[in-house]
Length: 488
Ligand code: BG6
Image (cartoon, rainbow, N blue to C red; front, side):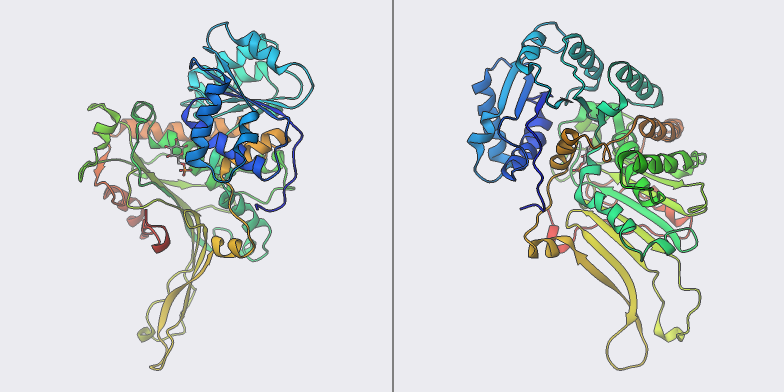
């Protein structure tokens, strides 16, 4: 069971790219789990759109295969009965009347999920409006990438705004659907403990790390055009930064939360110093291809790793660096936010007691979700006062398992929020554009840096040069390592 389940009225979900990787790997399993949990009711229709020449039975067989691999439990028959398929080349005229007639006009919520290449976002949106598929209860779900810089994002947003109201557009950043990411808001705003020390007076710096062990894994062509700054920092890392840095919203609703996140993005000091952006790309070895081999372009200049030093120029955070780091083919899969507090102002202990380590609140987003608070305590036993650092450790799985709860996948939450009409966990137009404005500067700095990105060994912590980014401020990165329980 996954907490309290409130069913949604039967709805129509049209998935463009219904035979694609995201639909098969994430969307169908997510919908299946929500149906098994009793949240998606009979009568709901999931209409997949694809170019493959198959009929509805062919699609159901495909979906059954996807569920076999990725979903548990056994109510597949009920789920497969909800699926329909329309074959269509979305840039042509055929297929649209079929889709329009299958949808009918029964006034229920309908969502169009654009899980297609970004150059198709606009043509598909235009055609579905022209085909008469847009109703007042229509929602449009847009996957990433939402533009590749400020200008393209603004153009995309403007075009979508000519077709749909902002309240109808759901821009996905799947990190916002992760339970632990939502938990950041609960941690900060449902506990009185943190707020008084959550500021530049008490926080020395913040580190946000999203490290992956995988390489570009068959997405070479996309990645070569994109790089880590655009693929990960513009969206996922900046969203995490917003949740950590934002002011308490007036209420927990979509506009109040997004207003506060926007203020953080607008307060980011524009990057000026080239040394604040360090890019890298992985080397091959041990049977693993190098980044250049994986993207299939020996001339590539794009980065599979980036480390950045950001500052938020506002009253709360003035002078507190936020170090961001993400990369592929690193030592471990590890996403965490570490809030490193300032040293105690004065030590009453003799030098022989040893140093007092700063308190660190580490929020582990994945895997092995949980929170660790680093404390200094007395080393137990005789021999006078000796200080040692020790973690106060809470692994969410332990607590949740005891209560019979599990962590749903991000897409389970996000798809249901679309149907419920809750935009809190989706990015608003102005947020996306503000994030691009800041990232454009980082991309320009990276592009103007002579030479290719710095090389790093596969399964390392990234390029040596990234160490300098924090060392020059007298600080250290936290280690990238798997915890014993999640070695991959
Ligand atoms: C995607 C990126 O948005 O997020 C991928 O395009 C990346 O490159 C992925 O691998 C990471 O997501 P997760 O949920 O596995 O941390």
